[in-house]
Length: 339
Image (tube, rainbow, N blue to C red; front, side):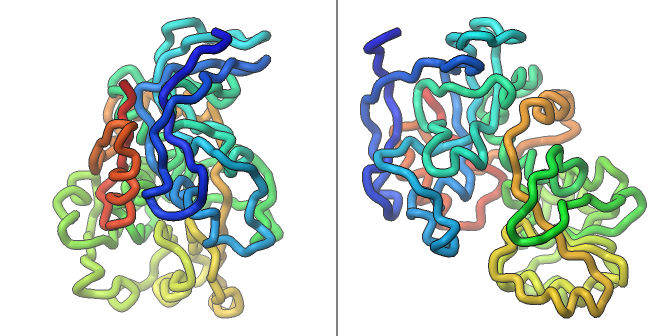
C-alpha cells in the first residue's frame, strides 16, 4: 500500500467553505490497533465547521493546537480495507461505521472527508445491517451525543465547565422539551426520549411539524410563532440542542428538581438562578465509542431510531455541503458520499 493515493478534502487555511480543497493525498496505513476503512459516506457535524473556521467560537485558551493542512470529518461508514497489527474482531470486507477520534482528534486527527481513513479498532462497530452507508454515516456523533446525554455517558472524563460528571436523569413517565428538535442531535434525542418512556415536547420551525410528529413528538411548538419558554411549564427535563447564551431562558419552564442539558453550553450564565430554583444544569462532551455504536446498531437497523437525511453531496462538493450547513434550518443530517 506504500505510495498509494486517494482523494480527500483538506483545509490549507482557516475560513469559510471556500477553504475546503478536494485533492489527491497519500492514503493512510493502519497503525497497530487500527483498522483501515474504505469510506463510502461521511457525515457532517458542527465540529467540522468549527475546525474549518479555526475554532474561533472557543475561548482562545481552549483552541487546540495543530498544523495545516487538515482533513476534517469524524463520522464515517464504509468497508474494512486493512487491519493494523493486533486487531481482531474485524475482517476485510466488513461493513463498519464510527465516530473517529473524537474529541482527541478535534484538530484534524479524524480525517473522515477522504477515500480511506484509519480508525482505532475500539471506536469501530459493524454497520447496522438494515440501513445504507449514507444513513449509517449520518448517525455516529449525533446519536452518541443524544445517548450519552440522555442514557449513558459511557465515560467519567470530567468536563471543564462543571466539577461533577454528567449524570442522565430518569425519562420514563417524565415530560421532556427538546429545543432544536429537527436538527442532527435533536431529532435523535426526541426518539431516544420516546423509547425510554418520556412525553416529548419538540420545539422547532413549523415546517418540521409533520416529521417531528412522525418521529414521536407529543407536541410541536413552532418557535417562530411562539417562544417555547413562554408556553410550557413544569417540565422534568429540557435538552437544548441549540444551546449557547440563550439556554437560561428555559429555566422557568422546569419544575424544582428538574434538569437542563445544554448540548452547547458556552455562554450559559444562569447557574445562580438554576441553584435557586433547584434545577440541575449539566453537560458532557461526546466521546467516540465503538461499544456504544455496537449497542445502538440494532435500534438503527430495525427502525426504532431513524436517521433523517437533509441532503447528500459528493465528496468533491464538500464546499456546497458546508454552504448548506451555514444556511441553517437543517432537517436531520447532511452527508458526503464517496465514490
